[in-house]
Image (cartoon, rainbow, N blue to C red; front, side, top):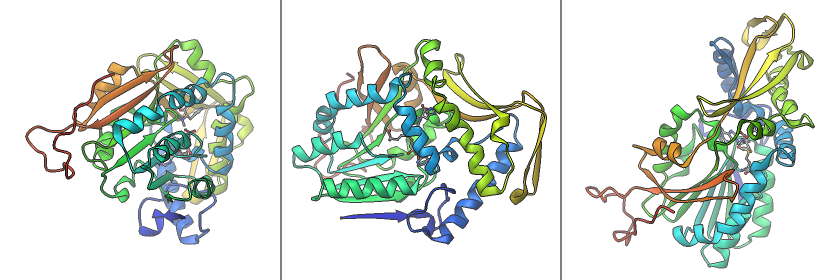
Length: 362
Ligand code: SAH
Ligand code: AVI
């Protein structure tokens, strides 16, 4: 059983203009266009100029991301895949979920390792994929529904920073945020996001996060400056989204890809740098922007964590680190986060969970 729900029709923020709609409904793309217009206006008028990285992922951008994951410099995907191959069984045994929810599911490849581990233990009932790109979402849902015929597979088209409450209450739930996508959330906003995820869970549930780790600058910068230039194309693609959706006239050839590691912030920052003095018009916004040669627009941050810096961000979120796995090279980690069981308030304990073990910090 499979279906894809557009949350936008329910009146929530509309995050994916330019992506093929699941239903092609024009109301959905109107809402998407409004959200894009608001975000781009605010971002281009702020100092420094910024664009939200979620707008990379139209259909072409999603394809480019897939190509990035196959570049030799981009160690993240293959390292996380290997960690999941090794530890999926243990994750499932710790959480015993009947429902898997993947935020930012993309092609939905790695999720199979967890679904297989659930199925092997007779646990699998439901799988929910959430993504901003409706085309990839619809394809993934159809494929998983065919491969796991006993499970209810659903797609939710939305923004994991705006729409989480639509997932409803937890209980037997494992939420995934893989690929290091947690790093694309500005770290100071992470506690708020983690609290929102916590609200989807009950004690005993889990939130499995793929975490790209702090490491030497050369390796990090190489991953975002691949020799084949795929990341550069991915970065410039955000301007193509603005040209199509807002009738802007960015000349993609007049913008240079920049990606560097900011050690103080512990994040990779991607920017687009104007290669000339130029004026860009965005008629749909009634906006014209002047750029001097060398002016930059920040398009993405990709924060890198240590176990300690991630734990520091958990403070007050209601989640604790229950298990931590890394590869031998300490490049990438899987962090299993689970709700704190507040000793003074067991009101959200599910039936029978009163004796839930606290779990060890691995
Ligand atoms: N989980 C996949 C894909 C990771 S790439 C993997 O492990 O390979 C990040 C994914 O998150 C993309 O599919 C992108 O479309 C989606 N995404 C990015 N920002 C999002 C947001 N704010 N809300 C929902 N999905 C988002
Ligand atoms: C999806 N996300 C974790 C990627 C990252 O590494 O931050 C997106 C990306 N940006 C450039 N390359 C890949």
